[in-house]
Amino acid sequence: MLVVVGIMLVGVLLGYLMRGFELKHLSSLITLAIILLLFLLGAAVGGNATIMNSLGTIGAKALVMGSAGVLGSVCVAKAIGKWIKPPVEHNATQGEKQQHEP
Amino acid sequence: MRMSLLIVFVFVLGLMLSYADCLPTFVLQNDYSQYALYLLMLLVGISIGHSKQLMGAMRRQSLKLLVIPMGTIIGTLCFSGIATVFLTGISLTEGLAIGSGMGYYSLSSIMITKVKGAELGTIALASNVSRELIALLMAPLLVRYFGRLAPIAAGGATTMDTTLPVITRFSGQEYVFIAIFHGMVTDFSVPFLVGFFLSI
Image 1 (cartoon, rainbow over the protein chains, first blue to last red):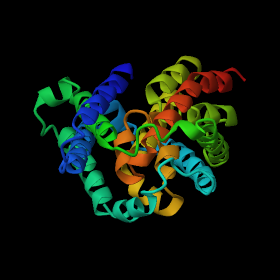
Image 2: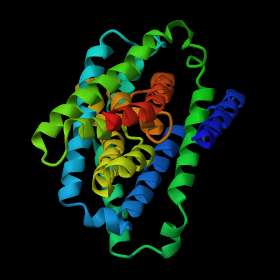
Image 3: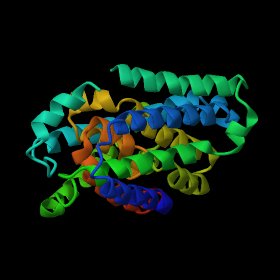
């Protein structure tokens, strides 16, 4: 966990130092890295015999519990979202249009 | 939507190739997903550091932001409790302990296995893994129907690492600090909440 945060902080420093340059492909690179991560996560799950065998009953129960947690939290988030906006105001409307359909 | 489908496709592809033994063994023996995560975090860090508006914009309202992880915890526990009504073999407190994992599957499943045995521990593991996967895979849909805080709430304790790149991508860069703060607070609550619900 600490390593992950540390690596991100190194990135922040690098990004800060690179402010003079335009980083055109950064968002595509992030997308690519997400795809790579999910492929590897899928491979890890598919290769785990215990998880694959329990995908039936235990898996169904787990999915109900996992979905319940997500649903409960996003409902509260929807209510909270009306009051809490991120600290960047002037760019918000522009960003909304850009990032809705990636 | 296209992105979301691509992510699901890639995940299922990895799963099937691995299940059918079509992947070279070194892929599974070495945990490359760890390095993929490191790469992501580096890129996300660069995007934060590179953005001029983002840094230092957070100062004004950090106490107000505590409402977000609190909301995640309350919402998760309420619905986890309700879900146990529909499931046989999981009591209310067991369900609350599973929900308290908040996606932090390694810690919560180990704690639950020790007290309640392997079956409930496995359910806790798979439940929290599925929470993380739902947050990763459905982020674009969650933003559309529940607003931009939704991927953060869904990610639970993982919003400071695993799900942070997806949040950056779909909620927007301005939510990165909220996500990290949310992840830290929620993460911190996991051992306390799981332990509490296992003890009553």
